[in-house]
Amino acid sequence: ILNVEQSPQSLHVQEGDSTNFTCSFPSSNFYALHWYRWETAKSPEALFVMTLNGDEKKKGRISATLNTKEGYSYLYIKGSQPEDSATYLCAFRNTGGFKTIFGAGTRLFVKA
Amino acid sequence: GAVVSQHPSWVICKSGTSVKIECRSLDFQATTMFWYRQFPKQSLMLMATSNEGSKATYEQGVEKDKFLINHASLTLSTLTVTSAHPEDSSFYICSARDYRATNEKLFFGSGTQLSVL
Image (cartoon, rainbow over all chains, first blue to last red; front, side, top):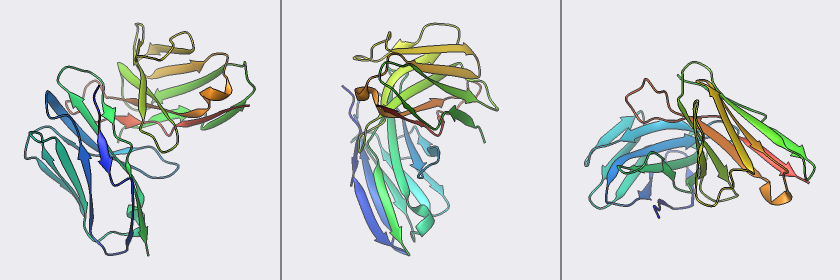
């Protein structure tokens, strides 16, 4: 059974704080790792798709790293803003499958 | 960017009735769409993979006769919850991949909250 774990489950930070969360996934047969941002009452939106060990991606104040050998990815948010409040989902796809398995998400609350 | 429209956003129905949820890709073609269910504080659980012009592929433990999937065109997939019962109450959401794209990105609908009384 493929398992994707995200931690922490939720996080409360102050505006301006930098923060990061973790996604753990099976280290064998890796194909791709996705990060999505899901705001309340909206659709999940793709942030990054990473495929290579050591990949680092950046979009504005948000960045992500990938370690496929040990099976983890970090998502970093620099200088959090209230509009960053959302659930951040990671998802894993292996080489043997067509489907993408999701973690339960990290719920981020940024207080002004 | 690519948009996936999902309707309805929420539905309340009586036990025993059937509910149809539509998922439509508005500006791209999707040979494959995915249907998920999410219970509170849990992961998005893949229920089935909907394939245009062929039968859907269901995940283990998901009853195909209970959750009917039809993917009749490259832009539309429907999920019908047949004879719904209170335990089917959940959040259902679809996603699709642009079949022309080389990346892995999934585009999601906004979800449907189903409440069965």
